[in-house]
Image (cartoon, rainbow, N blue to C red):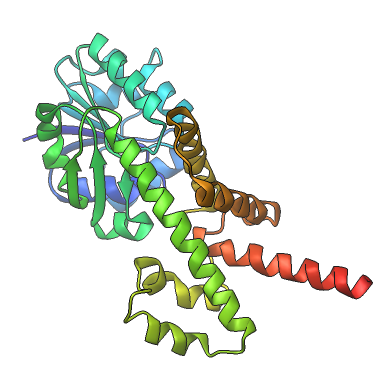
Amino acid sequence: MMKAAFLGLGVMGFPMAGHAAKAGLDLRVYNRSVEKAQRWQATYSDCVAASVADAVAGRDVVAVCLGADADVREVLCGEQGVFAHMPRGGVVVDHSTTSAELAREMAQAATRAGLQFVDAPVSGGQAGAESGKLTIMAGGEPAAFAKAEPLLQCYAARYRLLGAVGSGQLAKMVNQICIAGLLQGLAEGMNFGQRAGLDMSAVVDVISAGAAQSWQMDNRAETMLTGEFDFGFAVDWMRKDLSYVLDEARRQGSSLPVTALVDQFYAQVQSLGGGRKDTSSLLLALQASQQHARSSSDKG
C-alpha cells in the first residue's frame, strides 16, 4: 500500500486529503493552522502529524496544496521542510497554483535531495474538490507521475501528464486565461440583458442550449443574477494566478490584452471590498462603474 502525506488543508486541500483518507491509503496530513488540522481530524481520520517532518517521514508520495510561491518554497525547502525529511526516492506532488519558474526551481531542489517532483495544479474549484472530480494538469517525469497516480485517483476525475516540469503550471495558466475571458463575457451579457429589461433567467435558459453555453453559464449565471458571490475560488486568488500568467506572458512575449484587462476589472472588485467574493463577481465592477457614471451625470 502506498504511504502518502498531504500537506495543506485549505479550501481545496481539506476535501482532497479527505478523499485520500476515505480511499484507505496509509495517510498522514499536516496543516500549519492547528485549528484546521483539528477540524480535519474530527471529520476524517486521526492521522494528523504535528510537523512537516513527522508527516513526511517514511512516505513514498507527498502532496502539497498551498497558496503561493513563497508558501511552497517554505514548506518544501525549509530546515524542517519536506526535502530535508522525506526519504530518498520519493515523489513530491505540488497541487498549488504557482509560477512555472518555481516548479522548475523546486524540481532542481528535489533532485539534490534525491527526490522527484511533479507540478500538478488542479481545476474544478471547491465543488470539484468536494466531489472528488478535479482535473489535474501535470508536469514531470513519467515514472514519477505513475508513482503518484494512486493518490491522484482519490480526488481527480481526469489527470494527465503534459510534459516536463513546469508544464502543469503553464497549462493551469491557459485554464485561467480562458476562465477570465468567459467570466467577463458572462458578466457583460448578464448586465446588458438586465439593463435592457429582459427576463435573464429565461434568456439564460434559452442561450445555454446553444453556442454560448459554458460551465460558467451553467453554474454561475443564476447566482450572478441574484447577487450571490460566495462559491469558492476568490478574486484574491484569481489575481494571484493572473499575476503569474501576465509575468509569464511578458517573459515569452505573448499578447494577452483581454486577460490584462480582466485582471484590472478584478482589481476594481477588490477595491470595492470584494476580494473574498468568487470570480463571477466581475458583475459588481460593471454595476459600480454604471453607478459612478450616473452619479457624475447627476452632478453635471
